[in-house]
Image (tube, rainbow, N blue to C red; front, side):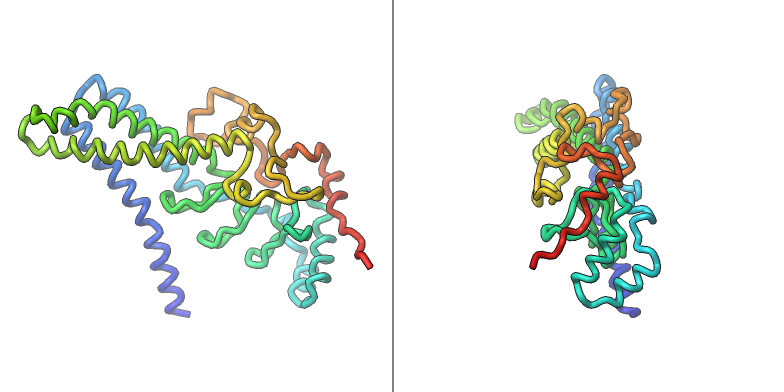
Length: 303
C-alpha cells in the first residue's frame, strides 16, 4: 500500500511540470518584453492581453471539474444488489429501473445504461470518467496536461478563452518584436544581453502561435457544432442510434451553450455557460424529463 501511495504522490507532483513550464515561460516573456524592450506605447496592450491570458489560464487550472449529483447514484439497496449480481443482464435490469426517473438520452454502443463502476454512478449525458483525475466529469472534453486539470462543463469556456488570449498574447509579442528580430540579423541592435532576449522571445512567441492557432481553431469548430473532443472521435449513441450532431441546436444556440446569452460576458473568464451539466437539449428529442425517461425503458428480450 505504501509504495502505491508514494507512486501516486509522485505522479501528482509530476503532473504539475507542464503547468510550471508554462508559468516560467510566461514570466520570462514578461521580463524580456517589459524590462528589456520597455516600449511604453506597446505596454498598454501588452498588459491588457497579459492580464486576460493569466486570468483565463488560472480559471482553467483551478476550477474544479463538475461531477454527477447524488440523484445519479444507485440507492443503497440497489447498489448492493448490483455489486453482488454476476449476470450482466440482471445488472442492466437494476440500472434500467434506477434510470427511469433520470433525464437520460444517451446509451452505450450496445444500447445499455452508461454506468461507471469506478465512481459507482449512472453517467449523465456527455459525462465520462477521467482516469487521470479518477472521477466522472460532466460534459468532459479532455484531460489537459498543460493545465493539469480536466476540461469539461465547469471550465470549458475558460479553456477557450485561455487559448484565445494566449494566441493574442503570442501574436502581439511576435508582431512587435519582429522589427528587432530583423535588426538582430542585420547587426543593427546594440551589443547587449537584451539582443538575445529579443531573439528567443520571437522564436518562442512564433512557435506557440503556430501550435495554439491550430488547437484554438479546432475548438472553435467544436463549439460551433456543440460537440466535445470525445464526441468528435466517438459519436454519442441515442435511442435511435449514434449521431455526432445529436446535441447540435444551430450555430447561435451552440455558441450560447458555452458562452451564455449575455454577450457582454463572452470575453470574460466568468462562468456563463447554459444548463447544469447534467441535462442537455438535443435536436433529436424535444421532450420534457418525463418523456425522456420513457425512451429509456428496456426493450423486451427477443426470443
